[in-house]
Image 1 (cartoon, rainbow over the protein chains, first blue to last red):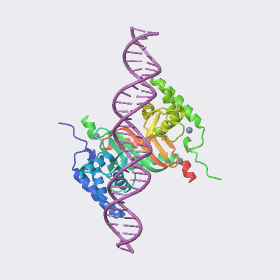
Image 2: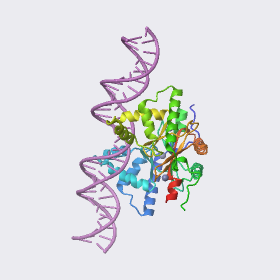
Image 3: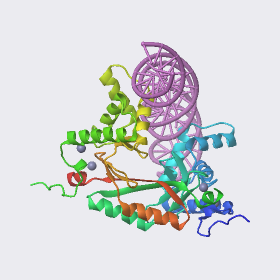
Length: 166
Length: 166
DNA sequence: GCGGAAGTTGTAATAGAATAACATCCCTTT
DNA sequence: AAAGGGATGTTATTCTATTACAACTTCCGC
Ligand SMILES: [Zn+2]
Ligand SMILES: [Zn+2]
Ligand SMILES: [Zn+2]
Ligand SMILES: [Zn+2]
């Protein structure tokens, strides 16, 4: 009998009903856009849905590709980047600089900066919101008089599932 | 009388004799290459010197540009990227993913992962090596069974000097 | 010295990611 | 209907990085 995944493994790394992740994310997005008085247009919703198709970050050109497969004809890069900019602005997706890729935001309300753990094998990215990390950064910055504005933490490694597979 | 820079401001944010930064970095590099049995060729040394011309991260194509101005004719991008790859491999420079740019490594011996504080105004980047940050990341990762390999921390904000100028 | 092997650089072409500039369309408000 | 703002379409371009192959240099055994 194969080793089971440790119970603390995040949802993204375990088999799960991902349709619930997607519908939850879309619902949240609709709601947030209403609250903020902005429009979650059809295009933006489709892009958000594509980003949420898995827990693995997706490149802008992958999104473009899939959009064009759905429609038959492909829009230009600006169309996708504009949708992504909108989603970024409203904290519905995040951009991972180390991968040049985008991933759906899994934290409904952002009371603080988030961090990402990225598996180099299965490419799954898990979003954290650890105050201990943010505090450690703030304190270090404060020590040299630096005012933190956008802390970015992207950790490459092996997720629990891939460690067990090895 | 204008406010003085706080004493804890890192060297990079204060007026200082930068020629010493450069010569120290080059000496260290020479030495490390000897130790490791690899060659710090003329090209690699020139690229390292260019990266060290300031405490602001430099793009690969900026390096290319400056190389070609020195020589009259410009090498291809691979020439520069190969030199950078070598320097990265031996921890003589770092790549900042959030800027697509490179900066000289200011930590002689890397006993642990480093972090960067990047000023959005003057573009100065300061390298830290804070065990508290690394520990906070390790602990968070451990909590969900993730094995950290390459933690990347790049913090955008305002350096002490630019805060006072404002 | 000679020949080969490994390492280094040169060169041309291409891939990949993101933006600029401008046109068009759509929705809302008057 | 007209006007304005927001959203999308379109084309071209910029910036970043890599692939593939050729040429050259250094080092080492012979
Ligand atoms: Zn899911
Ligand atoms: Zn994995
Ligand atoms: Zn200096
Ligand atoms: Zn500054």
